[in-house]
Image 1 (cartoon, one colour):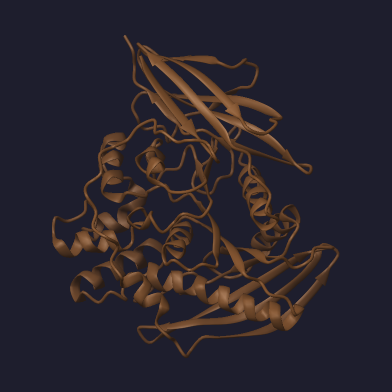
Image 2: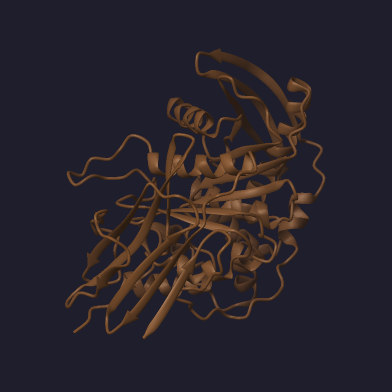
Length: 441
């Protein structure tokens, strides 16, 4: 009999699947060296204040740095919902582009649920650059430039992190000047490569990072992840073609390439990332294998939680049985907001544990929560291989726990449990890790 215990919050943790990871040297200093290097181009100014029925939005222009003779300029919004007061901790969301109606709606929804001022940093990274390159193509270009020059300032994630650090500086100065109030710490969040940025901001050791909420960046412990990705998909995901085309993936067997991926892998810095962590993933994200979290979850230090959004891809918007997507990712917004609210107001996040006894393809699943739950559900999906990107997830919220999940005869079956909570009228969910059962004959 195989007994698997998964835990969250203040419970003891054991992994479902632990893939052997190579020995990793101490983190290189390049990230911290770049981020902490003095940059006289840093500046900010308040350019607009809008008062609405929903609250007040302050607009700041920020210069975070000059990187390889390129000045990084950003918009930085501070959103204060109606009747909310400044708090010692502020949620800081980093993302690309510039403010737009959708981002404003997202910011207001989060601020209203958090019940405190929140900040949105735009322009992470500065783009397009180097002949019109953006996003992953731009990151890949800077990785190649690092390999060619061995200049540790080239990886684009480093100036992306520095832009978040500069935003924290600006927000502290703004709060003191505008509100005569000291903001002391931040909950840093962002999605995809901005989630990557959130991990690495925590990895700098900046004490102002009180908690992080990395979103859809399910790829820590990268050498192991690349192996697992090929195992699941048969080849690297087409979503990372910018890296495969530049021969960055598979990771070349050279000292320079190994150091590069060590420099930018949050898993390498895990001993520094001890603050509370809320990890948010989609079950149908085309970037990552379904069970990617299991390659690094047990290695993470400190309190940690995970949310899986069922039937959602990289943007976390859920798709119903008719193929219609929701406008905004409400499940993710609610859980992120609840987490930020608890961190900001020093409230306890609920803990939960999952026990799965497995024998001959049968799992007996038990979920225990340390806080009152509004509902407990099990989500399941099936696929002909370990590639679940197109799978349809179906919930069972009528079963009593413990519940039995049995492996199928011809297909792979995946499942996870979900608990729902109520935080002063805000309903949010937490998840267990995902388990994949191989076909059982």
